[in-house]
Length: 263
Image (spheres, rainbow, N blue to C red):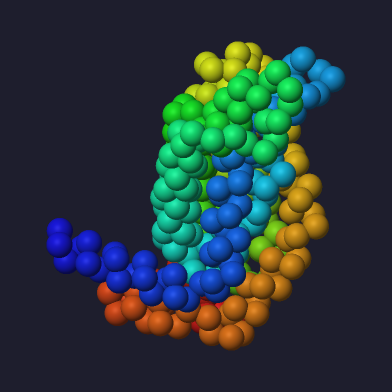
């Protein structure tokens, strides 16, 4: 058990040295802001349709995971997912502590409403246990679903796994499945029980969020494809692949990751 933990820790450290720091930073920021924005529902003209503001950044989370899965493999993307969830929980704790510190929010200076507004802001930034837990469970579960779906679709393109068509297929299918799962899990565990959403609203929220995510992919899938091509050309992550090859066999690791042998 000790050797297993040590091996996994070494792999994780090597991976984080391999993935560009800007990508990791933006991914974690997207996870954090996505869960914070999930506290705000969007006013819509249809009572059967419900959305929260988390959808404006959730696309970037799946965008990043698709890139990492394509180049480094699903295990690497899952590792990044766990890191994002842990950092998010840590900063949620800091925000909770900040909300308990006596003081006045700048936006609460409305005569006669200072206490009400201040408490509302404390509750929003401090978070509520069901939103934090629900969003974390939904994120981790949907991310794992997305990563393995992306990898599985990619395995179907054996002759030319690095072509644009293969990237579009694996990205769109995995994003659709993962985003629907993310929205549906959160809606059922949080919005349905605590916000009073109907089951129809939960389903329409999941479907609408999925569609919004796919529309974002129309704009960003090609830049993402170019990123994976550049990473492969640069040989990004050689230390990570070498470490995994030494433990699991070069061919297996190579096929799971960026398919260097098929270029």
